[in-house]
Structures are given as C-alpha cells and as structure tokens.
Image (cartoon, rainbow over all chains, first blue to last red; front, side):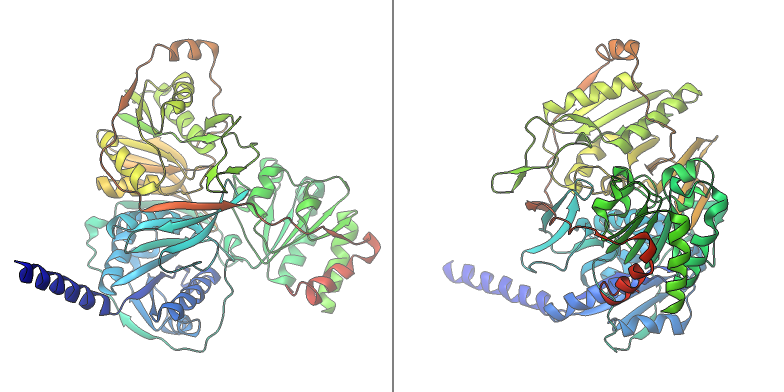
Length: 343
Length: 245
C-alpha cells in the first residue's frame, strides 16, 4: 500500500514535470489601426519581451485583420519571436465574441501562461471574455513589470489614479491589460517569423453588424498619440484653433479639448479628453486655456510631462503641470510654434 | 423585455483615499457611498427606455454586504422595479461575475458601467457575458430597442460606430448613454421603500486575484514657471531637460 502511494506520488510528480517542461509563451494581442500597428502594440511587445527574458520564455504576437508583412515584421524588432497572422477581414470591425475566441484559441495553441492586452476600448472589451475562456485571473490597467513572478504580482492604479494597488493573480494563466505609457518601446533588433493562423472562427461567432462608422482617419489617433495639444475654454472660440492645429502638425501631435469646448460645439466630442471622455497618457500633454477641473485631470494625469498655459495663476492645472506659463495663449502659442520650428 | 442593471457600491468620488492595516485595506471610516457613476448613467438609460415603452421590468443587482443596501434603495428610487443583493464580499471580478451569472441568465439586456470608480476593474460585464454565452458590446454611448435587435452606438478609435446586435446582450456603457444621471424625486424615494429588495446566498467560487497592498502615488514635483515673454524656453526645456521633444 505504502509502496503504491509512493509510486503514485512519483507519477504525479513526473507528470507535473512534463507539463512544466512544455514551452510556455507570452501572448500579446497587437491591434492595428487601418492596417498599421499602434504605438501601444509596440509598447505591449516590448513589455512582454522584458517579462519573457525574466522567465526564459518567448513572445508571440497575434494580429487580426489585414496587415502587410512589412508591418508584421516590425513586431520582431520589439521582441516578438513569432507572429500569428489572422488575415481575415471579418476582424476589421471589432466583435467581442469572435475576437475573444480567436485570441483564446491562439493562447491555447501557444500554451501561453500570460496574455497581454492594451488597456484601451478594445482591450477592455476583449480581455474579460478571454480570461473566462482561459480560466484566468485578470488585472486591468497594469502600470509596471511584475514585482514578482511567483506569486505573480503587478501594480495598477485604483480609485481613479488616487492610489496604487499591488495585485496578485492566483490562477495558472494570467491575463492583464497594460495602461498606456507604462513601458518604453525598445528596439531589441530581433526578428520574427510570421505564421498564418486559423483560429477556427465561424460566421456564427460574429454577432455584430455595422450600420455606419463615423471616424476620422489619416490623422493622429488621439488615444495612441505620443504628444497631445489640447485647448480649453480659455481659447475663447472654436475659430481660434488655427495655432493649435499648426503646433500639433509640427509636432505630429494629436488634437484634444476639454469638456466645455466640445459641449459648446467648438470641437468634436471625439476630441474631448478627461475622465468622461477619452483617457490619454501621452509622453507630453499641452494644456492651453484649460483650468484643470478634477474630471479633466482624471483623464490626462497619467501623461509623463504636462505643460500648462493659463491666465489664472490659481488654476488647478498648475498643480498637475511640470512646466507652466501664467499668460495669454494668444501670445504663447506663436512663440511655441517658432521655437519648435527652430529645434 | 427585462433589463438588469449591475450596480457597484463605491466611495463618493470626492473621498480622501486612505488605507488601514499596514496599507492592506481601504479605510472606509466616514466614507459616503454612492452608485458607481457609470452604473448610475446605465440605470438612467434603462429608466428612459422603460418610460418610452417596451420594457417590462428593470432589476438592479449588486454583490456586497448588507451595508450596500442603501445604494440599492437609491437605485430603486431612481426607477428600478426590484433589487437583488448577493450576500458576499466582492473582491475579484471573476468571483463577482460568477455570482451575477446566476441572476443575469433570465434577462434580455444587461447594463454594466464601463468601470467602477474604486478598483477600476472594467471586467465584470465582459466576464459575465462570456460565462452566459451572451453577446457583449463595449464603450456603448447609445442604445435603442428595435424589434428583435439592439441598435447600439459605440466609441471606436477616432470616432463612433452604429451597430446592430441581437440579445441577450451585455452592454458595457460609458459617457453619453444618458445625458445626466437621474436624481430620485421625493415620490421615488417614498416608493422605493416598498419595492422588493431580495437577498441571495452566494454560489461557490474562487477569487482569482487579490489586492495584497496599497500605496499612495508619489507627490508631484512642483511646476516650473516660466515668464510669458520667454515662452520659447519651455520648448528648450522639453527638448533638453525633459527629453520629450
């Protein structure tokens, strides 16, 4: 009896070692926008590469929809060793059910222990469904590399950025969404192999039919911009946006505005940044004539550097800003434009 | 058509955030509790849809201790017909979704706020949809009932999109779904006292995540002020000091 027990234990130990020795990968869902990968996608790959190095694993990226091979190869530069390409135009518009199924099927085929999404509209939509399919714990809005791998602990912002939590995931498979600008995009000079991947999706998996799309294309995508130029009520009128547009063009920046500006109809609602609008975390955020209400700051305070220009020295935006000018936007904007041209 | 609105009980958004027990737990002493702002907008839209006809019942559901009932009563005062509280502590999205799945399976439309203003998880709605094999759509800023489908406006990169999707559906809603949250009228508050609020025992489940400790963000360094006439210096500083240009 004793002998039997011993051998069973041994067997169990043995089978565990076999499972462990199967190569685990880290899977990253790299989104594209009109066929081009977002900066965020490169950030995710760089982040995944850093974890992979730590645990002696590799990074696989999964791409859905139409993307050229040249574009797919870029993922290798940032640390992906394999790209699963699902070249299927049904994925050009997001369908939560089908997308989650496709990514889970990639995760299963790659035996992925960690699956990483961006913490944007798409990631927020897909990660929870994927977590259930993989029987995984999910942490959204992660802001750091894991503090430890075993147990797996990451940092995330809580209470609308008023505090930070250290969260542990207890399940074998982990799903996380990474907050924008949490990790640098690093060219590690690797190259990736591209594989066509069939996730086994039927038409019946698609539940969404698109009636109409109203989106600006060809411009800098606000949620993915590294620099954002934003105007508030202090701009006085929608007719005064010429300077901001010129500055944004020179910097390759996205254009944004505060809530009163879009409520007044000076600018489109799609440009409204803040807690109730688009949440952004660029490297550099310019706030012209924005007082900095708490709701506005909630949506922009994760920016790395904030520059504020406002007439009112008491404006709360100066508490969040790194560089400030108490002055007139009409004087400052042309000076900024000249200085940028001279760089 | 039956609508279920998921309600998170969260600290008032102006709450000063503090922690206790060597930074392992949120200090809830003296905290005012409210309906999560996004859930409040979802509920407002549900009530509007019911007033326009075509909705038989609105239920609100919450996973939490007895102390969260005041928040459910508030939701009843806004216009929900009945409320369900699942009597357990909500610590992990997976666990909470498993609890709600028991209730949600009987509804045609489930509305969830895009995130909760406390732990900012934005996960329960999507998890619930997958557990029940329901359709889901996220970043929803508009919802209309059609004969056999839902007409949904959702926010996508660089704009918005109108889609048609069948039920049962979990819609994860954001700003725009309703103009302003509805404030309960005195009549609503009186009626809410008589509306049914039932309690359910939790089903077995595990927490797949746990918050092990908290910290406050490091204090922001002071803003460097530059005179208006030397505005160009800011660009130089961004280039040379901050290295972001």
